[in-house]
Structure formats: structure tokens, C-alpha cells
Length: 335
Image (cartoon, rainbow, N blue to C red; front, side, top):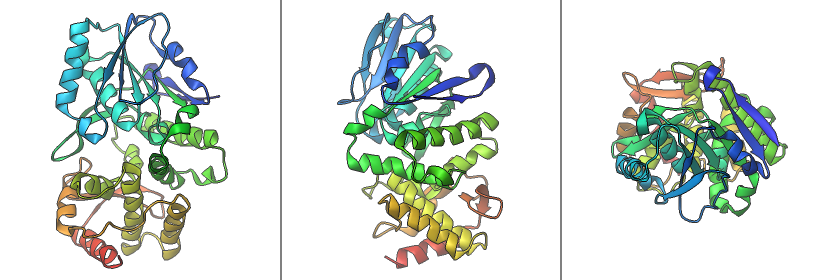
């Protein structure tokens, strides 16, 4: 069992990583909680929370559940049950659940405690850590949300044993990102060590820049194109798969701008191949539509904003639309 602290002053909390970690769930809840609302999805294993009244609130599978309508329904359910500011939410599931549970906790009674039990690899290495919550609009992913730190996070590796192979690969897409954010030693480690290392990297970044004013933007490496491909809706891509394609595109764009060389691009491609992740754009990509979606990305400031590799490491930069279009066209032509 590994305990990784996220150091944020009076909002600090622990991330518990390992087989059987869910046994520590009750320890992470506030003493004031008499009721716990467990937000989860169908088919996800139930959790046991001792000495509290448990109310299970089930949401639909998939990104379609991440809407303001779902948030309203959950908040009304909590109100009907009689939840108070002293009670707590537990989000049990993957990134969709932790995003929803965190956002509901941030707005109900103007903020109540939340603990995440991350049951997918993607949630364990990334989505459940750091306090970013949100839901989607038709215009873009996670455009409505809040920064709301959990009281604790549980990453029980036993939950990954029944994870479908494609969902595991999707988590590897986020893990691949961390290879380029200081996690070059991830190769060859045990799964517990890999998850803990990813959490440590993210915890360090979040501790330095909790609200994405500067350095935290590097955690979006590969996500600008990745999110656009997800929003487009016409491609059968999991989040980590879309991020994988976004990582390769970001590397190619950095090479076009003279920030890295061919060898560094090939390093990205080779790593993703090891994880059995896609490195090419899907067929029949509408370049203009993708450009439009990227321009609406929540990180965009007066133009297209990309997180790119370079001599100072990975950093956010404004990039001319013509350069992005040209590289998209070049990548699409290679299919």
C-alpha cells in the first residue's frame, strides 16, 4: 500500500494506492458525515462505508451522463433525502463519475466533502486526482465546472482486474502522457508503482498550481486535439485513445515549429506502440471542423493553445492556425 499526499495546505489529502485500498475509505470521510451519497454507474462494484447511512445514486454510462441535467437531478435527490453540509459524497467509478461527483459536491450547499474511489486506470492515474471537476456542453468538454479538492482518493488495484482491455488501454493513454512530464522511469515498474508515480507527478504539479494559472496546463499534453476528436462524435475513440493521437500530433507540431527533432517524435510513436495505442488520425477527418473545435477548447486564449514539447520541456504555447492546419493535413494524408 502506498500513500501519496497532495499538499495543498488546509485542503491537503491522501491518495491511497494498492490492492485492497478501498478498505481505507471510511478513514478518508469527515467525522461529521451521517449520510453518504454514493454516485456510481451500473455494474461498478459496491463499496462498504461503516457507521453511516448510505444512499446510492446511479448515473448512466458514458460521457452522455456528464451534463448539467444530471447534476440537477443528483442535487435534487440529495435535497429530498435531506443531505446537509456536514454529509459527504463518494464517487465510485471512472473519470465520468469522479468529474460528476466532484462537481455535485462543489455546488450542493455551496460545497460538501467528496471522496473518490477510482475504479478505472484512467481515473487512478489522472482524472480522480487534483480537484478539477466538470460537465460537458454540446459546445465542448468540461466547459462548466469548478475546482473542488476531494477529502481523499482511493486507487484500489483490485478494481482493475475486471476492467475491459480497451478501457485499460485508454488508461494507458493518460499514463503515456506522464512519460513526457517527468515519468521516464515508468517503464518496467509494477502497476502499483506506475500508478503511484503518475499520482506523485500530478500531485506535485497541482501543489504548485492548483487552479491552472500556469504550470498545471502541462497536464493537458495531448488533450487539445484529443478533446476535439472526442467532441466530433463521429469516431469510435475512448478518451485515452484520443489523447494518444493528440500526443503524436503535438509532437509533430513541435517538430514543425523546430522545438524537437525527428528522434523525439519517434520516441512518442514508439511508446504509444508499446501500449497498443493509436498514433494516426481516424479516417475521413474534417480538418476545418476539428480546427473549429480546438479553437473552442477551454485552454484557448486569443487563438489556438497547445501544450508542446521543447528544449525547456513540455509547456503551453499559442500556435498559428496555419501551422496547425498544415500539420493536420500532413498527418491525414499519411493514412
